[in-house]
Structure formats: C-alpha cells, structure tokens
Length: 132
Image (cartoon, rainbow, N blue to C red; front, top):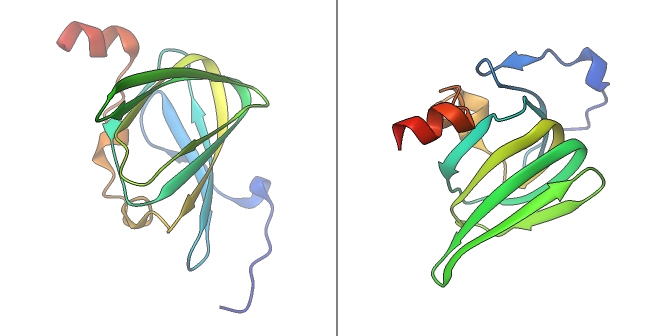
C-alpha cells in the first residue's frame, strides 16, 4: 500500500442498526472509525485482540470494563479519551447522542468483513434491560 488520502465527507455512512452507524478507514495495521450512537444505544459486551483508543468528539459514552478484579465503569465525555487494552471485555451505553472516534491496532477484520453481528442488533438501554 502506497498511501491513502480521503475526507470523512467522502466515506459512506454504514447504518449498522437504528441506533449505531459508522464510517471507517483502514490501513494494513491500524484502523480509525467514526461511530455514531444515538442516546441509550448500546454497544453490547464484547472483546477483541485490538487495543482500542476511543476519543469522544460529541456527547458521552458510559463504559463497563470487565476485569478479573471486577467491573469498572467510566463515563467518557466530549474531549476525553479512553484506552481499552486487548481482550478486555467491554460494553458501552450512549448517555446522550454520541460521536466517537475509535482507533484500533491491529485492524478489526470483523468490521471489514461485516461479521460484527453484536453491533447490528440495535439494542438500547431500555430494550437491553428488559431482556436481561
């Protein structure tokens, strides 16, 4: 790969569900994505090999990070950054409409191959709590 140059405006929006959509750019070893989550939208509990750096551009996301020592909760607001280590199970709920910039290394092949079904279920905090 020589190089890529693009504008977020030129990248099509991928509608994952009623509450989550995204745009992404991937190189060979790293990936960046704009993720749009509507208020009360849920990113279900999952984990992955990639280290994840989440920068909240607008809104706020409440994360649950599941460690052997217990669950840690942190709400990340606009202008704040959260680093999630590889393989740490995590879940997030949009406290308000949210735009986050996620950076992954290595790249998320499940996102590129669209086998990321956990994101496509369209869960919300109210429907997720009702089914728990």
